[in-house]
Image 1 (cartoon, rainbow, N blue to C red):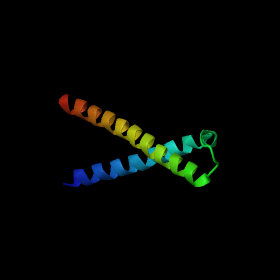
Image 2 (image 1 turned 90 degrees about the horizontal axis):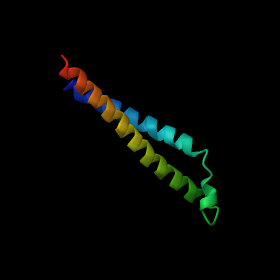
Image 3 (image 1 turned 90 degrees about the vertical axis):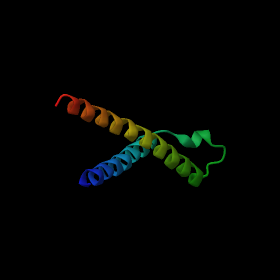
Image 4 (image 1 turned 30 degrees about the vertical axis):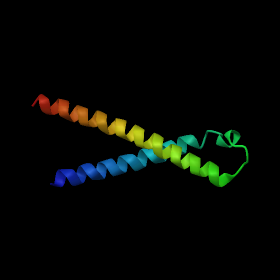
Length: 77
C-alpha cells in the first residue's frame, strides 16, 4: 500500500517539475507577436495552458520510460 503513495508522490512532483520547465522554456518564445492585440492576460493564459500541455506530456513520457525500465529489471530477477 505504501508503494502506491510513493508512486503518486513521484508522479505529482514529476508533473509539476516538467510543467515548470515547460513554462520556463516558453518564456523565451515571443508569443505576443502571434496575438493581434497585446493583451497580457490572454498571452499569459495561453502560455500557462501550453506549458501545462507540454509539461504533462513530457512528464508522462519520462514516467513511462521509468516504468518500462523498472519492468525490464524485474523481468531479469
